[in-house]
Image (cartoon, rainbow, N blue to C red; front, side, top):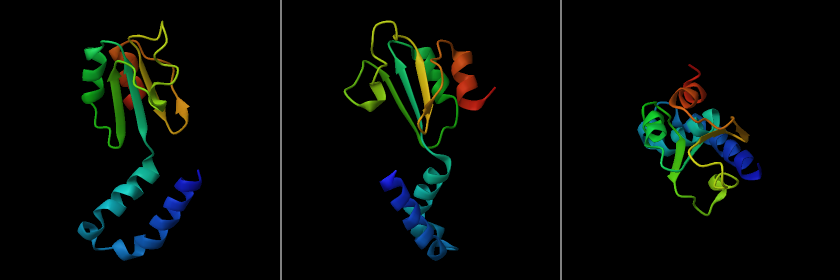
Amino acid sequence: THYADAGRRIIAAVTPLAAGRGLGFAHLLAAAEDAALGTTEVVITGDRSDLVAEMRRHWQPGAVLAWGEAGDNALWDGRAESGADGRAYVCRGSVCSAPASTRDELRHQLVGR
């Protein structure tokens, strides 16, 4: 949270300079959008090309997608254990939805319908 708070302070301080100069502040605007909307993390375990295809069907700016074999990073923590294979995990901020096993479940978590 320390770095997120510092980032928000920087965005707030520089935002008045960006008004009317969007092209010159593209990275600032992207950071502001990310700060406002947050990041969506999606992990799809196992060989589930159907779930990967469903994820790709939806406009998800700022989303991070990891799939296939487990990696050695925080996205995979607790998701590569036996019995977890073939599911999608959708997290926004520090809140994760229940694992999705079908395209319909994943669609609902991504867009709410």
